Structures are given as structure tokens and as C-alpha cells.
Length: 294
Ligand code: ATR
Image (tube, rainbow, N blue to C red; front, side, top):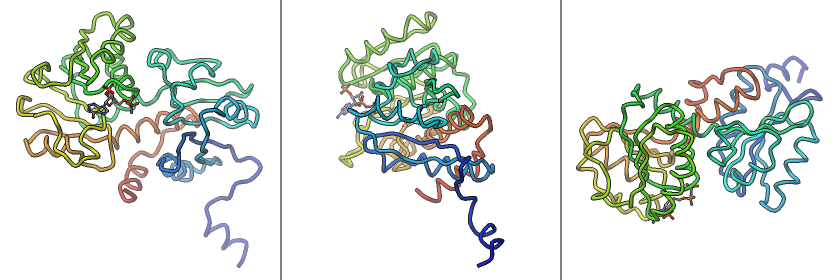
């Protein structure tokens, strides 16, 4: 095989200038992030690689210090590391501080760790890409009060949303989420509610967002009826596999517009990519590859 054939046939192989990116999680083998970032890096001819690292929660501080010491360019974090990363950062973006979770870290030339949350604006990017809503005017009902809910609520508030009801099985957790964010967004009307139809303003809801795994494992229909939603309401789920969750199926059957979590996954990655490389991710190319894979 000639040297030319090698170069033409294979993508550029790593060399001594290759910069390393990655994702940490526990487990991490399910992560789609390498399949998002590596094709994007290759397409733009960037000499970088993105790998998945299984990091046990007990070894998170060691892993992070090691990444900085090795001159890694940055990394993403998935479950269960997003909250635990916060105190390990040298600098935190205000939004990540408010949410209390970091999903993207940029390591500077001095090895300092800069923590960001791209999940929150990634959700809003995905929403507005498909549905040009005026978030300021929207009545939002959001189901769940876990880590994912916290990011989505903060993203919506940051984008100017003024009316959000956070409904959760454990109402105290919804109330805590609101208490943590309310002082940063003093003009917004935020309410906590139990996850029961009668307690939710569904008839005035423009945007219903599910951040729980409700109905996903048991193949049962979604436990909340959508009959009270107005015909123009948009129904979102942050899950992307399956592409149509029980909630989205119920919404489609009612003739409502739907959005799954694939766009959020892509847009959080796209924002991280730009932080690390200074370049725009080729989104359409990456989206098509992902759709082919899933
Ligand atoms: P994540 O970080 O992915 O949001 P989490 O922090 O474990 O995960 O939050 C899971 C969310 O799903 C919570 O809002 C949880 O409600 P509780 O706070 O009451 O536990 C919700 N959830 C999980 N299983 C549920 C169920 N069977 N019925 C209703 N809500 C459920």
C-alpha cells in the first residue's frame, strides 16, 4: 500500500499535536457524544479526538486534575458527575452556578478549569430552531424537578420566559428548585404543583415539557391526560431514544406539535464544541449521522 493511498483512505491519524477532548460518566459506554463530536472535528479538519472515559464518582477529583495536568482541551460530563464538578472548577459561568451543574469544562493553558452548562441553552436552541415561539409570552408547564428539570427551567428563564409551573410527584422538590432560581429572575412567575391534572394550568399551557422518565419503562400510557391542552400547544420530552415517548405519542394522537430530546442533545454538544474549538459545529451533517445511527 503506498503512502498516498494510506493518506487518502484513512482519516488523519492522531499525532503529537492532537488535542484531547472527552466525556466522563459512570457508566459512559452509552454516550452518543463521541459519535457527535468526532465526525464534526474530522469534517472541519481539526486535529482533535473525543473519547469516553468511565470515571468512578470516588475518583472524580483525581480524574479532573489528571485531565488538566495532561493538557487536555476540555471535557463533557454526564450522570452522575454534573453536580459534583461544581466545587472542582476554578471558574464557573453564572448560569452553571445557578443551576448547580456543569456539563462542559474548558481547560485553559494554565490548566485552570472553566465550568459551563450548555444543557440549559441547548434546550432553548433546540426549541426555537423548530418552533419560533415568543418565550416571554409562553405559559410553561414542566414535569419533574430533578437535575434535568433544573437545567431546562434555568434555560427558559435565561431566555426570558416569565410563567412556569413546575409539577413534581414530590412537590417540595419543585418548590426547592423554584426557591433556588427565583431570586435571579425576579420578574418571573414560578409555581410549584403536584403532578395531577387538576393542579395544573393545562388549559392555558403553550408549552408542556417532560423531564421525567414517566411512562418510559412500563409501556403504560402517559399518566397525565392531555385533553385540556389548547390545540396550538407544543409538547416536548427531553428523551431522544425512543424518538417517540409515550407522552409524545399521546400528543401526536391529539394532533399537537411535538419535540423530542435529540435537538437538545445536539445543541448542548454544539455549544460545547464552539467553546473548545472556536468554530461552529456542522449541525446538519452531525444530525443526519445521528439519525442514521439511532
Ligand atoms: P434527572 O437528573 O434525570 O432529572 P432525577 O434527579 O432522579 O433525574 O429526577 C427524576 C425526576 O423524575 C424527578 O422529578 C422524579 O420525581 P420525584 O422528585 O418525586 O422523585 C421524577 N420521577 C421519577 N419516577 C417517577 C414516577 N414513577 N412518577 C412520577 N415522577 C417520577
